[in-house]
Length: 370
Ligand SMILES: N[C@@H](CCC[C@H](N)C(=O)O)C(=O)O
Image (tube, rainbow, N blue to C red; front, side):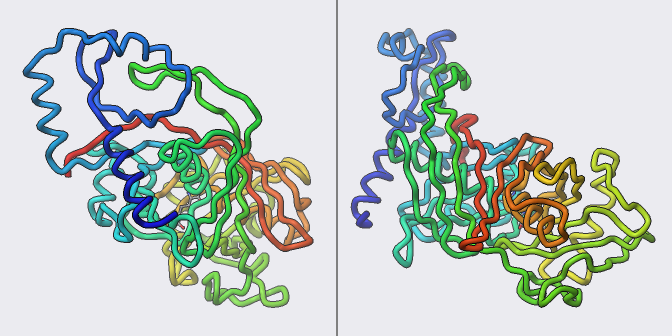
């Protein structure tokens, strides 16, 4: 798409964020109209102009005319993101420290990160950048890239199956929205509509196993990979495998002392930061604690770099299956249970790529003045 066409689309998307009459309350509500021809139950009554309170209307219109940031709030298995339509500029509309404030669950919108849809480079359709909830910038985000695909479909008004080439800090990532025809009735604030429940399948590329590239300072134990290496934390000798999916992951199935992990028993907020900030991980690390339920069914909890305990981590689930295969614990195709729900992961032998399939959905749309 040409920059001019992209800019025109951005303008029309921005124009779609408009005040609309909320039929049940007679009040006014900021929400986007993205032009989707979905059946919306509330739409018919929105054509009727309800009496409006001049004070409320002028307040919201005034707020809207100030420097408003329009966003979509999306989630993939409870890993939630503030999505920003940034197609008109290569510079994110929000600075890292502001992103941290927006992510605050008490003083902000609340999210695990802020994701920007930027113009594509090097032949990609779009560029994805993300700030974690602490303001740091990771290279990639698996659940985020599924949300990214669904957000693009919304702003570009696309229906059915679509795939996109997305430039990320981890290289080219290709999500594909699958159209299985399933729809569910959803209510977002005052508005109800049928939303598409189809999953997004993502080609997550090849895992990186060479220790210094993960990066980790732990010595390699198997060819050039760090597999079942010992890492001393809290008086335990943890067995860890290190995998990068563009971003660093440290995966453990247990320690010398605790042969088998019961992940529900872990106090993540105590143990997680000790892995994240361990000197063996010069770029910090995401950490996955894993229980093997069968050779094709794993259960994990995650402590994310820059975000803490989250309900799901897509790159983490991919890294877990790679680690489980390297340790001889599982097959290449697994269901990975996360606190927010399951992901289907496959590490294909023919092309060495990892594929992740799971849901991603809009939660609400809004505007903040910044
Ligand atoms: N939740 C994400 C990963 C987000 C980035 C991560 N916190 C990092 O710093 O690497 C996912 O779904 O992959």
